Image 1 (cartoon, rainbow, N blue to C red):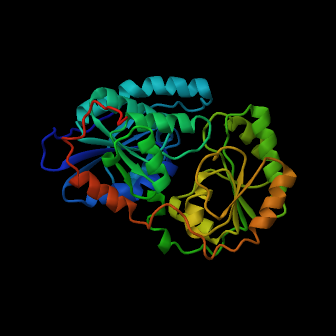
Image 2 (cartoon, rainbow, N blue to C red; image 1 turned 90 degrees about the horizontal axis):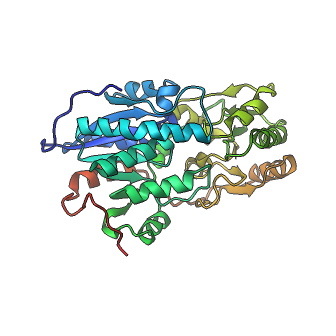
Image 3 (spheres, rainbow, N blue to C red; image 1 turned 60 degrees about the vertical axis):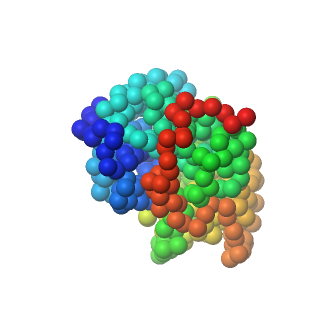
Length: 369
């Protein structure tokens, strides 16, 4: 764990430490980090953790022009599953605590619901630092997504909700309305400028595990691969959640080329040009909705999340997926609407962080009810 020297509290600029744990998360955080770095009354420190350090995608943060203030190893290469996540959480909390004590942030800013983000949130709250959370109040079943996301929300002092519904949910959870802001999703920022790739496939297949047994995950992935075989498709490797081994086994038995990662810009160019995104990624419900690309959402991973009009839900199985894809390819998305803002979320978050008076935001939280 390496930490660069930081100025202490009381500096002229408000110090915001942003924690990023994966390439996907960083792609969403990027407009927020750029807006913070550009704001004359804010100072940004980037802390990398999670899959960034397992897959070496921390280089994306460097290439984007950000100095990395600290690296916090949490997960270990080759270790997946629930017990590995528990061990990662145990390593992460004290490690993040030490980093925050050295950096002395005014605010720690996190996104989403992954295990390294939960560790950072716990360390910030217990360590006495104000915590801000992006995309709290959402619902998504995932593996343990919903529990961890809501737990992070209860640890957080400031909330940057992605939709009006998520803001209302946070307030019903006991969060003070004055500290909950509907700013939209940073995933929407810049999407209006995306140009379709000339080599975009007919289908993008992106199916992540939901915590099933390896045999179940393998069977479900095989069904999706079989249902989409007749189309020109681009198939992505799954994320590292429990159950990945089963999906990897299914992918190893197909002759299709599998993509591990793509830069976010390239992925979005393919997504806007594609006919349908198939699987269970949140990109099908957020970015695809903004880009007006139909989505076939398979299985329970996104249960509870807001579903714009581009989404067709279906169960696992060859025939189920095949019918849903056929319907999606006929979908007219010209008048599609979504609840995730107008594409200025990064700037809005930065301005709120600069303007808000933190003195009435107690470090020791109390429910509003």
